[in-house]
Length: 423
Ligand code: AMP
Ligand code: GLY
Image (cartoon, rainbow, N blue to C red; front, side):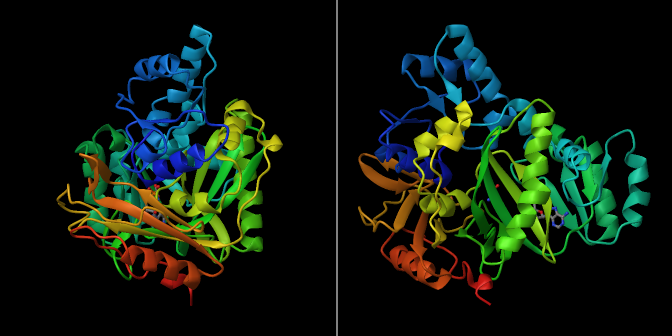
């Protein structure tokens, strides 16, 4: 389910498995069309999704982004399957566990309860908003304000200006700046350090670390300019060494998964830990209940495990029986975007690109479509180019060489992906 580079990465890996007889992608893009059948479905109508699955004997559903998970697709489709007596599973957490991403306040309370390291915080809403000014005055700037609910990645505001923080907080709550999503706002301590993401796959009991990754969110080189959906990624991240990853497992992965089990909601799916490396100590900035984009495009090429076996294992609770292996090489992903992105863009430009790439490379489609048999641009983030290499510079060189072979009007990209990790 989905239409981005992450979903093409899932689709490609699934289609390469001998255990997949047919793959449908809803809605997909020009890349996923080469992996299976793109279909148009209302993904928020779970009954319709269930009916479609029943008609086409679909046994496994893989949600790409958070919206259907937070809206409860896993519970809904499993109930549908039980009612109809059909075999159908969802590789994703249930609605309760998906609140880890759906509500910042829920995630904070969960972390407090299970001792997962995170920034100190306080929650505000219409009832206690008058106390927020004094609370903000007691903090060391910058101030971090987070809309409780889903806000398409835009619900976090960070400012060093106390008056602006006070006004913004009131506007989020009383002015509904992010609609119902900001009726509750988490105000938290600012964490210093370098951000890193760690990806975990779990079947409720057993789990594996898929890898670490760093993404590059700003449009401009040197991390300048507005935020985007992601301009590139590197996996693994050099500073996420054995000592750091040991801390991530002991302090974050284990208590999180054990906490979910203790609450009666064992976690089946992909868990994305957004972390701050605070002088060698990992702290959770956020949980996401899905894979990241563009991190998936860097992590999946390193995964040697059969994707269908892994997804079935997640849904059925037996990943321990699935051989798990990750390539030790580094993956470098560079995103090609349309001119003007993340602002206004034009679509529909014809694209030219190699029809085949080396075994160590991937060309993932994101904002692409087929128009009379030709691939055309269809969004801001167009293509993700990934290469594996023995070192970050080798992986980057291979990706940038491939970038040069791709043409479309307005093609732009960052030339500095991964440079910060080399020094
Ligand atoms: P989130 O949606 O929670 O990931 O927040 C969006 C971005 O805001 C993160 O990727 C960080 O760059 C930044 N951020 C969020 N919380 C904090 C924090 N407590 N300290 C520093 N930066 C933060
Ligand atoms: N790369 C950040 C995300 O997928 O949310």
